[in-house]
Image 1 (cartoon, helix red, strand yellow):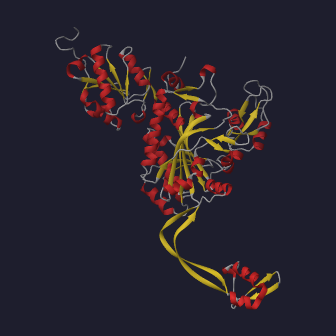
Image 2 (cartoon, one colour):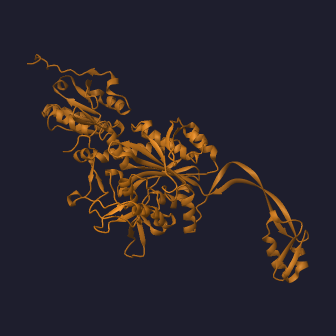
Amino acid sequence: MERLDDVDGLARRRGFYWPSFEIYGGVGGLYDVGQIGLRVKHKLEGIWRRFFLEGLSLPMVEVETPLITPSRVLEASGHVSSFTDPLVECPSCHRVYRADQLLEAKLGVNAEGLGIEELNALFQKNDVRCDACGARLGGVKTFNLLFKTNLGPFTSDVAYVRPETAQGMFTSFKRIFEASRRQLPLGVAQVGRVARNEISPRQSLIRMREFTIMEFEFFFDPADLQAAMSALGDMAAESLNLTLADGRELTLTPMKAVSTSHVKTPWMAYFMEAALQFLLNLGFKSEEVRFVEKGDKERAHYSAQTFDVMIPTKRWGLVEVAGISYRTDYDLRNHSIKSGQDLSVSVTLEKPFLQASRRVVAHADAVRVDFGEHSGEVLAAISTLDPSQVGQEVELNLSFGRVRLGPRHFAVQVEERLVSAKKLIPHVVEPSFGSERLLYALLDRSLVIKEGRVVLALPSSVAPYDCSIFPLVKRDDMGSMAKRLESELREAGYSVFYDEDGSIGKRYARSDEIGIPVAITIDQRSLEDNSVTVRDRDSWKQWRARSSELAEILRRVLSGKSLISLGLEEFSRRPPKGKKAGG
């Protein structure tokens, strides 16, 4: 039987998500997000946009780039050569496993990031067997996680389904920068689908072959520490729970993490703190969120430092819901080299300054007099001289022999110019969140059992509906009033779940299971005095309120207030007018 606390079971039963193509047996790592789950997912993405793109007082823009990516783009980014996982195939039944994860499960060792030779040594040393047929395993090889396709009918035009949204933002950076009034720092965000051909997808929504990520590339001048430290200082900071690559566990403020060099750049610390605040807004607690640093062998090829943002789950333990990486100028520099296009930018300096420069100037008339037909070669040689290494005289070895030049032939001139801009290739910090992983973590954290019943105690900000509306019994007069209130609340901007089928207890249970925070019931008294009962999902307590108050009650509940705090009349059943209790 399905356990009450089984998140996947609830998800299938109530329309949050389920395995794709179930009628054909399903496909590992592919999931449909159902009608209820999609409402929660869209709300998550909306909160992410409002928090990071509008709420941080930083220049941020959002773009959309293609899912299909030409091969040359991912060759330049290093994904074609480096975006791999280790694979081991059973020699008997040909079942395949991700080698490092299999060793971790079988031997209890940390094998993430180990090279092929190191993994093969572990297989040779230990008797690791196939789960399906019992054959001994070995012979680890690399497997590229990119989904390969072609552009048009020609197999030579190779392309891939993007494994991240980042490369579209990097290749379009120059245009985005120009359209954003040439300012740094600048965040460029994207929410979109990506695909990774996982060897052995598992853990429900935690490891999928196709999923949605919410990420942005934050471009900045690495020499401008003042802007980063100022932004970090303005943030009301919670301490970060860090697990460093060497295994040490520390709790530090973002500022302290930077000053002790545990975090390599202030912008990295800034967005780690922002990620924590975002998760706190979703109902997670500070002590639950841990930032785990990737070791040298574990982090992606483009990263100088990466912290995984980890959340505890009941079934899978700590689960990564986001990653924050310091990509330096790796991507822009490589795309500049491979494309032949200059992706450096010129930024205006806040404080222009005078810069002295020296250059060697030839006295052309004297050179022509002294060297005649060879004067052209001498003048060309003078133009290549380094002013920092030229004294009063210089000796050159030219095609017609060695010559000595002096003040008669050249001079070193000092010039001053006003510098008001500088050219650079920006560095990048990338915060990247998995939409489906966050959805799973929220469902897992919110699922509670109350008196043998499932209650999904979602924060009201991500609940699939703002309220549910029920007529107490299926009667025309109650139904008409319930429908009228539904229409009024929808026009006021609230999402409403209407249900009139089954007993009121079963309808409450359905509403609780999909996480609707407020249930509104129309009963006999409602027809008399236009009041309704308002029920709290988590406490199951009920209050009486005038129907005209509902929009304001919902506004306050959705802003974080509890129904208990609103001072409503405690609900009590009373007989209709003209009847005695029990009559």
